[in-house]
Image (tube, rainbow over all chains, first blue to last red; front, side, top):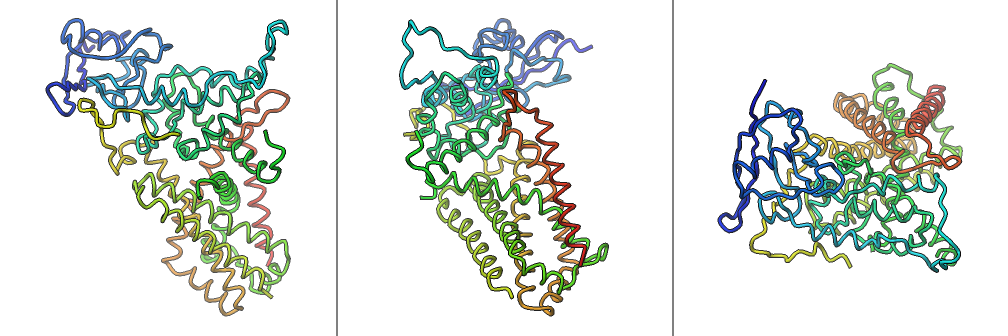
Length: 247
Length: 116
Length: 138
């Protein structure tokens, strides 16, 4: 029974180095510990200078995304026992600029989420005294999966296209757009289509599928993107053949 | 310009991929392996020629050859662009790939039109 | 509108890792993806072979005979064997991925993925059988 395990962490202190370095810590092994527990142990007992993000520690806030042994994971949901005998390698998420240690800058991600207009768009708002929008369970089912995204950015870190083309709008943003497009209350599909059919939109995606593999909430962004490609292409053909008929 | 017809290119890619997935395995197995190796008897010239006189066969062959070429063009273009990071050559790659698919389609159409 | 990422481009302190041109070898999933994409080369190869056969048929029985003889050479047999494996890989990955792109809804409920995949394979068998039946008659 191992009592300690090695945690090899990427460190980056811009005030004294120009490239990341590795530092290894021996941490106690507990079978109920996750990588986040190990990182907090390092910060509390071994090296208070280690910087990383975390919040809910239960897989709903999306703050603690990092690469564990090369795969993007939520560190609050990644058990040490799955990586024995170690060493366990922890690095910041790929394809985002590293600010310090395991902290990356998320400005680009947030900007892209906003670009797809993630809110209910109506041509005309319903008057308050007309009551609520009603939705059947089947109508909810049409978009529910895509609404489960916790904005953890693991999919961006897994997407090689995002790495090669930093302008690519990315899996979470497109899945979010689909969440609204498929919502029966929404009438903004045409507006979102304009943004998503740009060169850095959906057409950059080559269906690698890694985004869906790493998603901790089973949103299936790759599926959302392919479905969106089909609907965008169908819309394009319709607008070509019947230019007067499209919204 | 290529960007404006991207949805069409993707549709051709999808159609071509489906044709290739459904029909190429059997055609390739027969023409490339079973017939040359003698596992099955290859069709005679007269039989194939007679088949070719049917307009349905000609349409079938046009679809069989042309759509997979467009499938290749679209997919290969992105493979070069992403895989080898040849971003600066993006226009040249697009022209060469789709151009080749167009040439192949034109040659097929010409042959199918003129065969007697 | 999307003018690239909105970072201060040359922020002096942030670290940006460069993506290597061998990115696709660093991960088994990425390598499998690139192999899947490369199947398109063998798809194009066979389309050209069929075009060549069409041309031979147009030119007459001797040309067709030469075509058949060429296909019997070890070079083409080897190439065709490799192409066959890649084309199979294309077909299998294509059928398995179809339900992701085409969500079929019957009476409000989504048709399960295995039904879509299963229908693809069923169609594949039927179509392959039809082609073989036609080509083996002469």
